[in-house]
Length: 326
Image 1 (cartoon, rainbow, N blue to C red):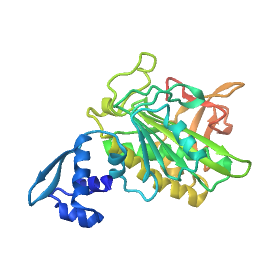
Image 2 (cartoon, rainbow, N blue to C red; image 1 turned 60 degrees about the vertical axis):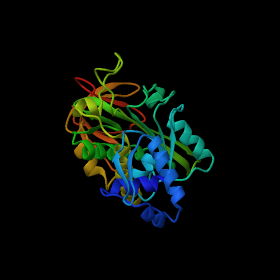
Image 3 (cartoon, rainbow, N blue to C red; image 1 turned 180 degrees about the vertical axis):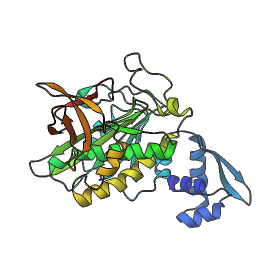
């Protein structure tokens, strides 16, 4: 109920009477008062005026189940939020929930991770209070070989949400890094539990550099944040909700077609590699080619300088720009 009251206060610029809230949620005046007091303790500035009611004056950039759920405008993605002030990693927690009957669409969010990781087991720097660390638990009715495409679905959702919320020119570095001005602002990691012919669950983790103002020496040349690029802090709960809304839309399109054919055109529009020379790093060899976009399976289409077209699967190789990260 607390999230619903907060959502109501955010939606109204005028005072909302206690009686209105009681009738809306079928609760007592005492229950409403207790919920308002809890919101105040969490940092929300709420004005209470006799014979007028309650009005939200200021909503700080805090993360909590109440705050995030109050922002959601989805049907299923992120409607159930599990929040941690600190945890090992949201992917770990989502996988534990996946093993124990956690519901499709549950979103796990942390203010800090002690054991965040990226692709190929790399550690992911997870400072407190400035970034977004979240993982979505899914139970898709798909054959296991299609699950890797969900990473690209999330990449598209994140890029579109960032563009919508900040106006910044967020783009995708194939398959799933989000970049701004040639630097990385977001990494995405999908993990799966499956049998031979069906998926038990999929978790897709997202780490967004939101309000960081500095980076460690080893990554400061290749990483940036939304605040550094945009010149102002972003509200993390609003961005989380926007990502979930965009993801839900893209996911439904993906599930209708069973592949990326319905999302391919938009993905290629945002693909920073598209039309560029890239360096393909395969286990046995490396070569230069020109990227042409993705196919309906999410593979990167490249044409070698000898004229041969190849389709690159993300799990097998890395792709880098010839003269830098992208």
